[in-house]
Image 1 (tube, rainbow, N blue to C red):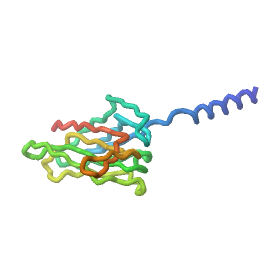
Image 2 (image 1 turned 90 degrees about the vertical axis):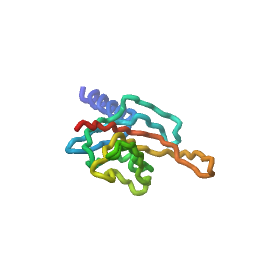
Image 3 (image 1 turned 120 degrees about the vertical axis):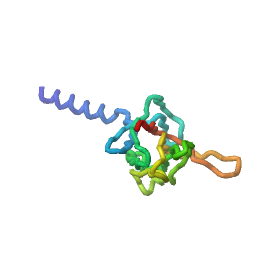
Image 4 (image 1 turned 30 degrees about the vertical axis):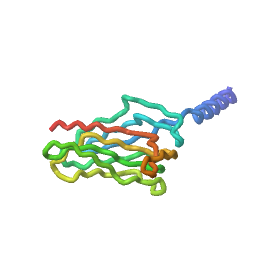
Length: 158
């Protein structure tokens, strides 16, 4: 009986090792609260095998002028990634911005987004993980193709 139990335990470990890896997550922090989300889209490095979840996004209250801390999974941090965001200035004008691209060698796992003015209201944030595929631009340059995206919708209730 003991031998059967050991065989069943070993089979369970083997099957657990074959399970598909869970998609990387991103955590957003602001005003003492956190929100975690999986990817809205995630592909392999060659951007060939992709999955999408249109319901995957985080919602978090971010008061005007407050910093937003972002923590990415190690599987994101070991690859090139960037923060793309939109906010409204005091006059209500929408403004788009983006961080520098963080390269995989640095294994950067966190970033703090600070808007330029205390009255600025963050609206959306998207973490973009780049794949190993390049796309030619008309101007002769190249762009990396986005392989994964994680989205934050800001609850701007005051």
